[in-house]
Length: 287
Image (tube, rainbow, N blue to C red; front, top):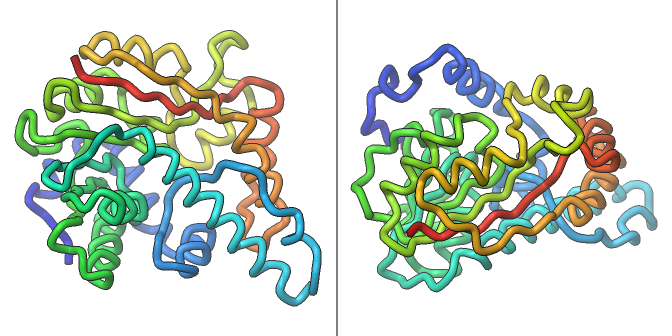
């Protein structure tokens, strides 16, 4: 099932947005996402945090790849759990928004934890269909719904959300109109949580490694300072900022050893290790 309450021509407003949507619509068989998600039906579109179990690199060679894939999935799920830990008090009557919801894993985890309604939005019609099928298979499609909509203009009611999150999706949009839309959607005191990669202003512009990441994913990684400028301009007050960079490096080190590696692992590791790229958790309240 695909939710199409907005016409496609209204959702994709620029050539860039159409190119991003086309990338994710045609990148359907990416084994990094699919092989990991097949373990427990939680399909993520983000990376992982935490130390990996070194024993996965040992033992029988015949099952080594399976062990690594399972461990990568555990680290990605741990990342989503960390994000949900920061949403604040959520009641079963609240409504949440997953902006740039991908294949939908974090939305399903939020519903499992809080028992509330969750809407996800994506400009990829394929992702929306895939995620809605997963929600239906789990029997939660009455509470977890995914929509073909633009996160810059969702069409949802003003003040209708208690919490919103973006999980590695902000690099596809301009932050100022994005946070303006989130400020409109959130009730007073509502919570916004962001996990993102951003380049380090102190080291200057994008490094070669960061530019490689941009090129790979057709994105536009923002400088770290832009997040805080855009939040302040839209009545958000950061209450927690955590540098997750050292916690995500083990994930990338492990991913270099798996069959589903894409070749971008070296760029991530170089950017993180040289300090030109940061992996941040930002928590802000709407005031």
